[in-house]
Image 1 (cartoon, rainbow, N blue to C red):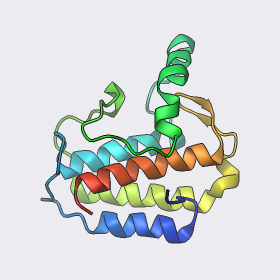
Image 2: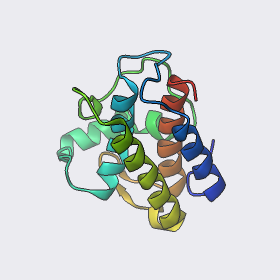
Image 3: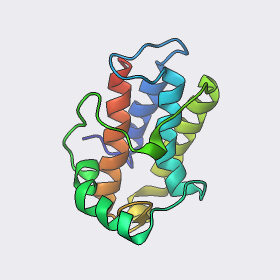
Image 4: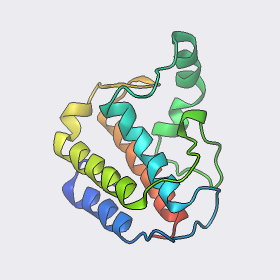
Length: 150
């Protein structure tokens, strides 16, 4: 598993993102490349902004019980994995804008470092360790970059 907090590993992710083109086609799934980038940005929006509503206490309990381990462990996501409703992207997105936003989020996360994320409250799962944060970020990015062959 890549460590998104390490500059070399985050740069590897950025280099892969920069290999994408606005007409890159997925190996699986329904999203086009611009939608995929917007989809990946949501994970970071949930950390750095308040634009996504937080689940209520009961839903957060269910997410922690049934979803958290699948998201924060090191096991790769399967192809065509079910996507949570708040991560579904509809409509057209601007490729360059979404790509640049994602790269900026990766850089910001790396610069803030593991210390900033140790014990940090997640949007849906409660407090996570820096390792769990890393797994969530790195695994999700890797999954979608593989989806588009980079």
